[in-house]
Image 1: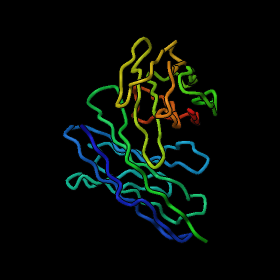
Image 2: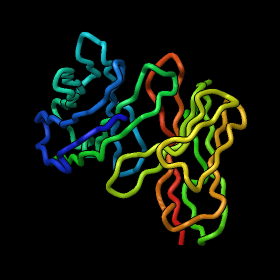
Image 3: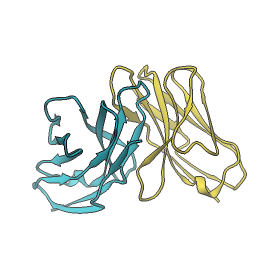
Length: 116
Length: 112
């Protein structure tokens, strides 16, 4: 079984600052994928970034980067230069890639509020 | 491309009523999923369909049934709604060549 833990229920960050959202996971699968999704107040789930367990480099997508530490089983999301539009709930998720089903297991989420 | 679409956006049911949530995707994805999101929680998988013609249970399947009508459409049915099924329901799809799932806008369901 896989498990995702997000220990920060909420965070305030000032505009233009960087913020790190923590995510730790527990899995016995040798091959897995880690995802971050953003859920603004409007409710939709927006894909941000993906990291495969065998990827050698940390994933980056624009202002988003994933600090992947495999030995520590952590996959923290870093948002650089925060903008007001970054205020949202952020979810970390994991899937097993050794099968083709792609089922996602989500953490409970971290609420981010960006202040001017 | 519309991506993943869901209908209805919002529904109120009485306990014991039935309804079907519809989901369609126009990305030619093989796999489709139904999740539910309860307040203060992440999404939990109800059912999934790895490919057309197959369906399987996820983490919380009790009280639900699904139909993979064709490659585009994947519906979720509540036969006898219960207040515990009050939730936001998300449909998602995935291309088998990539890992990323893309989500629909969600259906907000209230069971009284």
